[in-house]
View 1 (cartoon, one colour):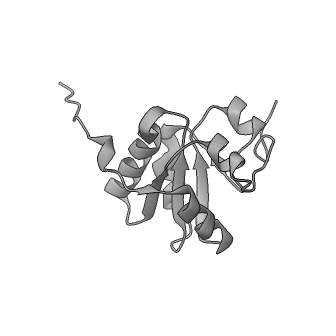
View 2 (cartoon, rainbow, N blue to C red):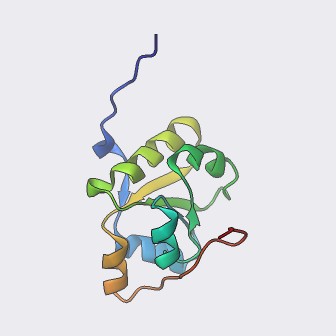
View 3 (cartoon, rainbow, N blue to C red):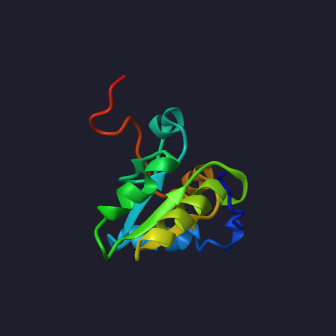
Amino acid sequence: MVVKQKVDYREAERISQEDAKALLDRGEAIFVDLRSPFFYEQFHLPGAVRLDLKDVVKHAETAPPRKTLIYYCDCPNEETSARAVQLVRKRLPVRAVAFVGTVEEWLEKGYPFERGAPAGATA
């Protein structure tokens, strides 16, 4: 019998867009885009890796130890990002946070972004 635990995703640590930008500027951030490939290709945060939620722990195992993993999605209340934070932090001693707000708000602030598919992606 499989028992699913209920998790309160509101408890995951969050990061403001301003603080995320400061980490980016210092070279201390790794953005992880949890949106669909279509939206990732339209625009994504600088250097972002696009992953499915099921792959976040495997990716975090290879992340540089001094970087902060910043997960972002397009769900209300950063739900998927918060799930990613909890999945990763439950298994690994890494700094992982959920990005507050939307990519559109990041763009409206004039912060940098990129377009296109990830390197090595096939059409």
